[in-house]
Picture (tube, rainbow, N blue to C red):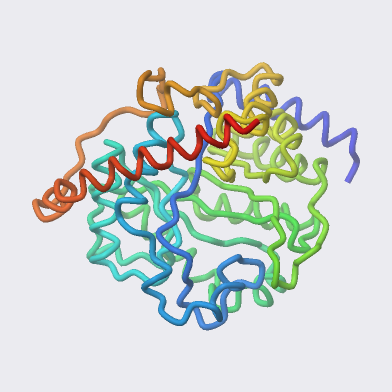
Length: 351
């Protein structure tokens, strides 16, 4: 890898992104349904793998509906799209239908889902914009070692099938697992084969009690190389890049390399604090216009409506049963929203 070449490619990628997507950048965040993975051998880098032995009753690792729905409300207030609904490896199709319907109804927006292999025939596709496959790494040896129960072929078949239902498709890739630069070509081939609409890159956040605990991160230039390579080969692909609290200075270079969106933050612990403002400043320093907020208190409280062109209200088909559930949960949802906002304001005021 030649660092000068990476920077030169990043400049080209930045200009190409502007040409095809304009000047806007937004923030996204996955909405997790729970913290339990029903795979007997979970992915070896995942937080859920470190928790599996501690969870004797998987049902207690599920989030309560009012918690998820309150988060969805706040996300829309501050202009963050849901990256996807995820963490549903212990949910059947009927349960997923109910949750996705209610979230989509509250957000007035169809959703991406990342919940394993999808049962298209029994899922309410009217609430779904797209399907994401957790590829994680395109290096076959790494994949077999780290994700033994998530083989790539069934995921590829699912993503190709999604196209038959006119759904958008995407994949997730984690960098820092031991991949090589030559794996970039394999990724480019996969994107072309699957005719993807989006890709999400994450920089590995090493978890305690996993084999990656204490492992070093991918370098910023290496990350830029992956992102810019994808952008130069796929000018109209949506590229989402994730980083973590200790790598916020990656954000500017990632935007310069062709990212459309930044993701992967602990929302409520950073909002309005120096870390959230740093995210905003990193994006703005690239000349991009940020159309989400990480600091606006009035938006967080619902006292102010942001101009968020990424949110276009849609008509969502939802069952009468789920409308009744939403009505019954209304007070609990509002209390949860108030709790999230209150705790966030207290954290900000401590600074």
